[in-house]
Image (cartoon, rainbow, N blue to C red; front, side, top):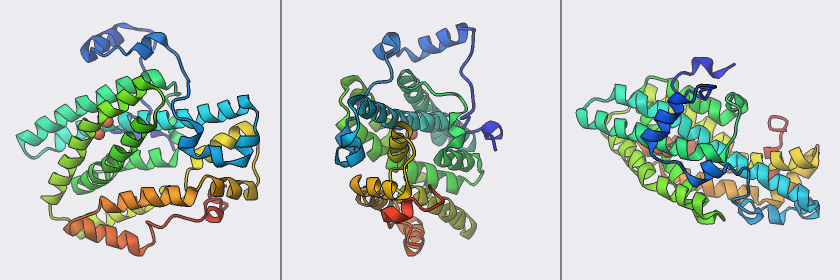
Length: 309
Ligand SMILES: [Fe+2]
Ligand SMILES: [Fe+2]
């Protein structure tokens, strides 16, 4: 399946090739030519081994200095790429919400939010170099692209703005706090205020709506899927190790996830997500998911079941 028919997320939208005129107009409009863009230095290491708990992993400790650097670069890039894709999808999502607005204030807000996500996207661009189609292999991005394509506004508000932007807020705060590079740390800090507004607008609008049974079960289905991806721990860190060190056996993967403290790491993220589902209808959704065990992290041996091997 390709992203070509996922027009709202626009993850497959290519950058302009050849003709620089449009890019110059865009740069002038954004008025944000970051230093990093002019230096063109990438990829670098912005978050250290301790940020990923890699310092506790034996295979990592025993690896050569250059292998350690390679693993760290991959882990760093996957964090930045994930932010890039989310902001890219965010532009399309906010533009869609302009059209779905039911009041003038709402329309104006979403117009401004579209510009926020555009600014974030442009500021992240210098830090990532990803092929336009690289998102297709990532389950989370496929899920995100599918959700924003939907037309149930209650589902959109809750999944994207209440849950994902609420989660994104703490994620960006953590990225900013632990970032070794001041430029990038400032960049993530500068996103926080806008993301907080996106999240609180989502909360406001969601709580004004009455949630139909169909919307509620659609939300539950999507979130059960999403939480499943959190339950299996930091798979991208595992993938970075495997890419550099070569094939890892099932028992090696289990050992690495144990050393990464994967279960506690996922547990924290799941509790954070649980806390976002408060209030009458949101609480009911949270309770349903809780009853499914969706907020319980998987132990390492279940994170490397054949499904994720
Ligand atoms: Fe954003
Ligand atoms: Fe946002």
